[in-house]
Image: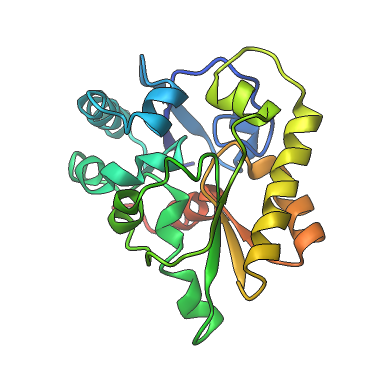
Amino acid sequence: MSTLGILKLDTQFPRISGDIGHPDTFAYPVDIETVSGATPDKVVHQRAVGLIDQFCDAAQRLEARGCRAIISSCGFLALHQQRLANAVSIPLASSSLLLVPFLPVVFGAGGKVGILTASAASLSPDHLAAAGIAADTAINGIPSDTEFARVIIGNVAQGNLTQIGEEVVEAACVLVARAPSIVAIVLECTNMGPYRIEITRRTGKPVFDLLDLANLLMGSPAR
């Protein structure tokens, strides 16, 4: 069976099934390569400055070990999608944000997608442009004074996962309240995946994340 390569940030926070960094999330084998020193703060708030060569080297190691495709564990790496993809000869999807320009096409004319992100303040116009996303796309982030921010962005070993889930779902509800016409929600953060079913239940909107993109790449014929 083909293997998916995962470029994982250097983290210690808890991961559960549904999280891109948890092997049980996938229906196929995964090969996880941790990029040393790539903490959430450095990638989310500091744009991964000085780390992209390490990410490229890690991607090349995954390719050399026979992976069919590669994803990352942080949507903010969309800023560096082209450079990362150019480093290997297999498909590489750095971020679920790559889905945002595609989904309105399949939902029909006029359909707009909203983005739920770990940090709205750090998701810059540069990130959006790198993924081909319109500047007027509806975006909501998790507040900086939450358990989510303390544990996930702060990268601490223990946290209240129930509270984190409630914060993620609440932020999705706020996104839909602000932009009720959106046809779907894309989860930028790969740690939000465990809560996607509850988000759909509460908002009535279909939810997409990097797992959908990974499944697409892994379903494609091997090169």
